[in-house]
Length: 281
Length: 184
Image (cartoon, rainbow over all chains, first blue to last red; front, side):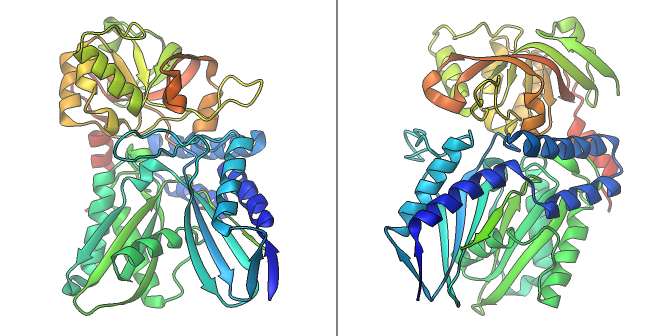
């Protein structure tokens, strides 16, 4: 049994919150540069140039890439041979979020009482935490600041089982088309296919953590990702919805077995500022 | 598609020249207001109360910044989704608001009100908050400080980059550009 002090978790989360908000990953930068080469619209090209410039500036000056520093979504992959000591794990994660958002001058966007008072909690807590127990004695922490504009365009569709591949392509295309410029394209499209309604959405979210453009390890799912991407990029929505060839940078799909009466499809859209940071303790 | 350098407030004689797709470099005063502030402004107008700033002819930017680091004017300050303001916008336009800056498309009602009130809707670069911060010379909260990042701010900007999305003649950047790049 390996022991990890939850204070280490707090420190790691505080660091990741800032790193994710200041530095776009090399994978996302590469995808944006590739998009700039492929883009044919002059307005779209100009938009991509500004986004690349923004990323350089944000990193150099420790300024948030976007004023929407997101809801704090934290993924914990906990090795089954890890014992967490000196306090409550979820409290430690929340404390890391509080410290990271304070120290980094990040915007605090969380409000309590969602359907009534909507008072800002003041420190961007509580985070949304997804925990998985995995083999081994490590603790992997993934941090994703998820902006409201893109998250608002999420969709869960319970397709008829016979809808198949074409049903999925049509449903995703319709979601992206209706979203237009709102979720800040070019997008990374997270898809959760199969399982149950709630699990599918979690799969769609977690798929966004994959390095931009990495295909699914399952060849059939990878082929579906290619088809969805091709179709979405025919819409003409383009960078920031101002028209162009590149509406999405990548499609990341995860699929799992499901009930024979169902075909759950969860769509979680990620804006071009696809921020995430990971550490293994 | 023309390129303009314009000072705010933008008078009608300039607004009417602006066409969807034009690039504009804005300088002068703009007011930042987003969801919660819009609800309060619309409520004040409905109940006949005075507004915290003179709306007539002014520019509203849909934005809530990150906190400024010490010694800085403002934090990151890119646009938020304009569509969430649609329910309040016709009321504000009828009260004299002339220019809006945000991101994404507007509702049919807002597009109609833009024509009727001879207004203009600009978009700027969503997710480029660090870059846009470079154009802000001065920033101060002028109303609803208790709303934190959603308070109304008066900003002085220099060469703030925007693109005309909806003009008073019915031009629509999104429709025109997306149609050009759509593949069957």
